[in-house]
Image 1 (cartoon, rainbow, N blue to C red):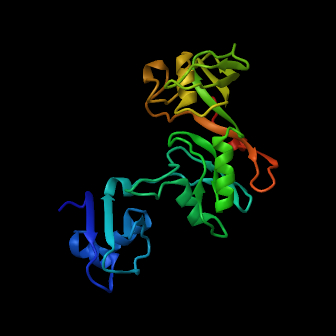
Image 2 (image 1 turned 180 degrees about the vertical axis):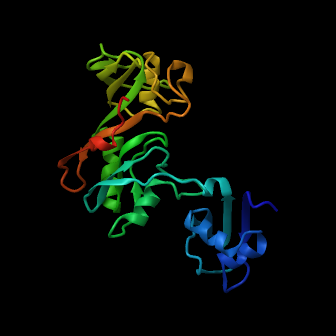
Length: 283
């Protein structure tokens, strides 16, 4: 049995066994590898109708439970830069999410997600719940909630368009004529609005820095709207190609730089700006 990819579903039949003892008996993995895998979120336990990640190596399992392992050594070896705290408001916090960090995990792991990073690093420790998302390749501001009430309030704000979001993008081409330019092209049959303003243009590289405020939140909205304007984002492997004027070594140049939303509890408008040192820049 290969160690590279394993998917195991095991019915627990005896008392006094731990996940580690069971999985070392039925897989080629060592106890050390299993413990590491548990911390990275690829071991799950079903008890009744509830299935959740299992991280405690010494937890005694009971007959009738079902143990699940989703082991992929390539996934578990992935690493990302650390996120950076922008504001800790107690019941929520605002972070800079770097390129490559996920908003949410999968059954195979959650160790490269923003919520897992915050769970492990924020002091004092608190529950960490997602209220909105950034694509893996997009960097910038993201909010993590720490209570059920703030999660409800923040989720409602993001879903109800009571928030404001601005992004910076480096695009291929001359966008210097765009100031408050409205794009209202439908995406997937749904209304989508982006407002684009050019901040800088470099003739020698034929690249522009643009600011985009989105009035709606469609999938890949900014990337698709800019591509439609023949201003593809540098590093966009979905809606552009290196022939547009970027190198294969370049990451997606899209960053969330401004967030505003009503604070949970009192509804006071809170505004957050990404520190300039964390922003993307025209080279």
